[in-house]
Length: 288
Ligand code: COA
Image 1 (cartoon, rainbow, N blue to C red):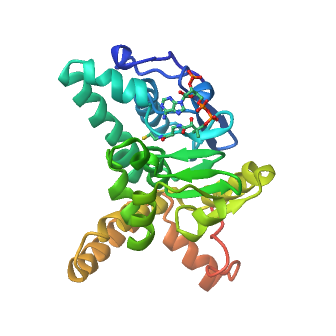
Image 2 (image 1 turned 180 degrees about the vertical axis):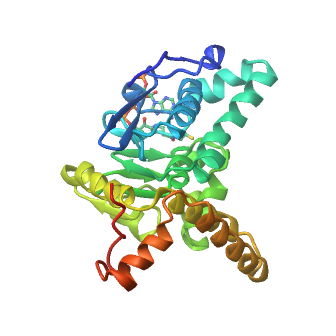
């Protein structure tokens, strides 16, 4: 699957991809690859606008049930592109810079957080600065043991901006977040697991197989209910307990009522009447 590439901010709006981002859909999994290996997949305007086009296109593509984001070559992503995203934008018209930065936050944060399909970050190598937004924006994450992470901004004289510091504060403890923000020290996959940045760290040779296995677990669940569950999680984090209870009761009812599969009814029937499965151990039979 490929589209017309949009290489930079000047070509944005063509709704294409294929130059800076590639997509390969195979057995329900959309493998999205940040594809600038010679620049360690640093996020340039091309990646920003192509990712927006990809996310829009895959939203209602039934072949894409789970999205995996990874990087070509030896990097996941070296963060924002220091030349194209920062230095060049200093010289660009203010509205162009404003539009680019807003668009970047839009896909890495809000779009990913509330994306209607499950997303997994497959961190295959270097992961720096702005790449933390992509990583944390995904629902789940698996990395290779030798992947190297760093909040390197402090090393070149800026703070972790975009929405990086906020993202990090949502998944890491205050002590850990402050330590890595203030020292810029790098760490490997197993430490990323300890810090809560990834769900699993595995040997590089097993990375793709482990990611496929996790994606298939998600593919086996009711997609409508998965969507409701992740949306609810993000909303309740900022609510009081009272509001969260009210919201979750209403969200639960609306999710069940609007479920095209009528999953709750089928699941209950298979457990209580047919005695064909155990909800504690597996998903109900979706008859796919
Ligand atoms: N922005 C722009 N260009 C970048 C980049 C970035 N974030 N990261 C790497 N590149 C470019 C390099 O300039 C180099 O380009 P060139 O071949 O035209 O000289 C190319 O990618 C390869 O980088 P190089 O440093 O030679 O690769 P390496 O494998 O030895 O080191 C890194 C990899 C990731 C450790 C190193 O490139 C690096 O420190 N990158 C910056 C990471 C960072 O601080 N990102 C935070 C940005 S918010």
